Length: 370
Image 1 (cartoon, rainbow, N blue to C red):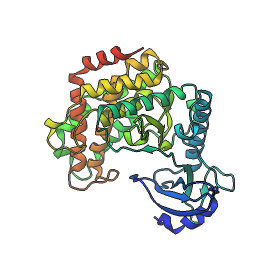
Image 2 (cartoon, rainbow, N blue to C red; image 1 turned 90 degrees about the vertical axis):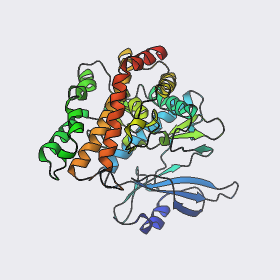
Image 3 (cartoon, rainbow, N blue to C red; image 1 turned 120 degrees about the vertical axis):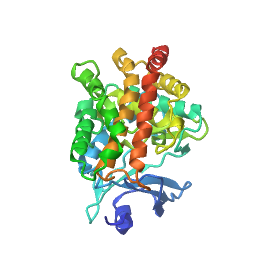
Image 4 (cartoon, rainbow, N blue to C red; image 1 turned 45 degrees about the vertical axis):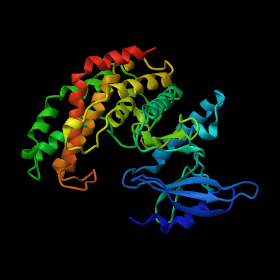
């Protein structure tokens, strides 16, 4: 792929930053898009910054659909925040269109670029080092749901088809087992059996949706802590970022992925599975904060299915790791042999721990429901 720096001068000329550009450097920890922070120098005030990104052509085949989703969501959020007396510039992302008025800029080599104002006075954390930080992310993602409760989710494009379709993930897993192209199934028979024993679980949420029990909503689908900008002074979540995976989905996807990511203390590829356990206290902390953020906007059925969200998102992630191991580590980058198998085992240990404490998970959810 062509280095983003090759067309960067052209791209900087394509946007009106409102002041002379004095620098643009690589920024952040993302591995999908090419991200730069652009520094400008207005005459009458201090430096103003912007985030400039080249969208990944490998991950997102249709930048037009991606940006239509993002512009629709950010403009809607902006209106909701203004109506409630909030700070539009800090509480929602805003797309700055290029000079040609399009939703994004296409450079001379076909790269697709976008610009957002930099949200000053915020910090992005890579891990939930304290329960308070985990709770702040829960309130932020809950509020994201509350603000978008009336947005027509069906109008959004699927930027990554079947992203949280657990039935589709199961089908791909079975195909990989059947093909066994690298002869690796002999190394992971217990893990294969773990998945097959939970085949019916993979349809639990989708069956509820098809039956009309769970409504389709706008979901973020990547609710890691580092996708919330936290206010430097208060520590509260200010702005949800990385909206590339915003699609139609179920609220339990967003809740469950946060629990999978944040309610345990082990490394994702921990080899000592005795260290891998669901932290019930962190589950409670996040549940209380998330439901507080949603402000009563969820249905009773959605709240009832929150533990299923934690289990299914963790099971799905484990299935993805195991499938990738079987096909030759094609999707998830590895730094050592067998890393994806170890990753899958940590997820399955978390699933097993959730099953052991299922009644406690349900009791926690019921404790904090409104």
